[in-house]
Image (cartoon, rainbow, N blue to C red; front, side, top):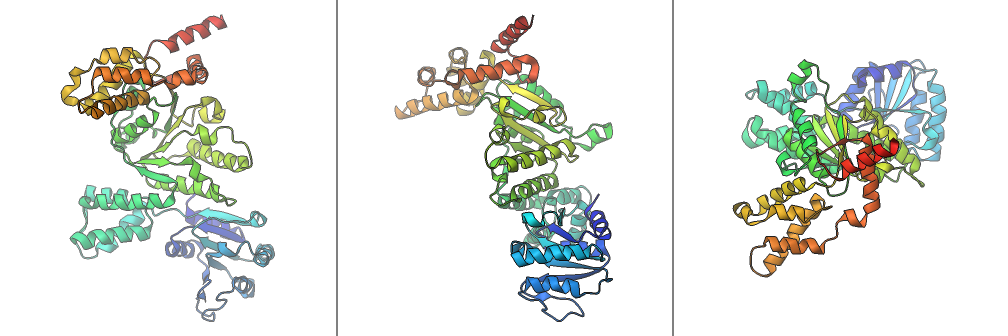
Amino acid sequence: MDFAAELDLLIRARYPLLYIVSTEEERAEQAIARASGRTVYCWDFVEGYQHEGVDAGFARSNPLAALEFVEKVRPDAQAVFVLRDFHRFLEDIAIGRKLRNLARRLRAQPKTVIFLAPRLVVPADLAEEVTVLEFPLPTGKEIDREIELLLGSRAPVQGFQREELVKACQGLSLNRVRQVVGKAIARSGSLDSSDLELILEEKKQKIRQTQILEFYPATESITDIGGLDQLKEWLMRRGAAFSDQARRYGLPHPRGLLLVGVQGTGKSLTARAIAHHWHLPLLRLDVGRLFAGLVGESEARTRQMIQLAEALAPCVLFADEIDKTFGNPTGGDAGTASRVFATFLTWMAEKTSPVFVVATANDVHRLPPELLRKGRFDEVFFVNLPSQAERQEIFQVHLGKLRPHNLRAYDIDRLAYETPDFSGAEIEQIIVEAMHTGFSQSRDFTTDDILQAITQIVPLARTAQEQIEALQQWAAAGKARMASRQPGILNSLQRRLESSEE
């Protein structure tokens, strides 16, 4: 059900107090007027009521008088009262009591009070009386209509360019669309696909302001990943899954991917490579920032994150190390963490928008089982420590970037042989350490420098051996799909498990 239909239903059903969360005040009020089909009275703290037949500035600087005015309007009058920024007064004891009294009376009258505010703040004693509505960002049709109005008598944008521009503007408020399109027109006197970069920068600005999502540059490609052949094949097969051709074929949008494994094995790198390979924007979710101090604000931030991600779709949403945030929450914030997690899970199961969620976790035993079941993600992959062949690829990737002209000078086979139990991140650090040695002696670094660095670094697989072996046993038991076709420890673990079952 869209916003207009839901609002109309709630008003006709005589819900007394509604709360609409939006930063687009003007557009929201226009939508309220259209959807309700009733007389709309608007109030704010500075100017009071501004409506024909009401004394100009009535109830200015007096929120209690603004509520009393609702009672003064005829009981049979079909009216809607929009109170701007009223969330600032809801904690007041007199306001709270007045609203509860008013809600009781309005259930028998065709009048509705709507709080319109940029953020959600509902005190616990009003939670039963207030119904919250999310006001959606503008649709493609609204943006297209606004672009046409802004262009005026200038040359219209047609065909593919117009579709590109409208799609690029999705996720912005109508006011920001006006600003960025106006800026583009002022710069060149027209609007075309060359202005996409300007729109993208505006999106980055909006995302930065949320402090929850980060527009992450995805420059790494699939070829930058050493090993993980089965995972890469899986991704390559889904490269065109977001296209219109895939929809016509009957394919649903890919849902997401959970990467579980040892730290430093390329899980985050894979998330960035997916976005780059599929030519989609990458949004990095800082899960910790979803949690706020005020009651209800964490849930509001989660809904804001979901709304923004869906508005920017198709995109890749990258949630790194979710086991640290959603892994068996305990303590005073367990209730909030559970509610945020439930909202996130429900969205993942029910979403129809092309938002591909890539989540990573280091400790699968901390993850709630409902996150691992089918329907949340398309697949769960286990990313193990690289085999010797994969370590060769990793050395090849790093040395190929640093010394492409001199790659044959390095004995990559020996380096891979001398680094059992080393992760990709540790191999990169080994090379950096060798470079420091060479640089300090005013020469290029050599294979011997890298071998010397290997002896100075203790890999995580040795310092956290028990945890990593437990994780490998979990994967070997068939709980996840292997990211690599690698022999070695996983196969031996699997044989050990099979023999113990017999």
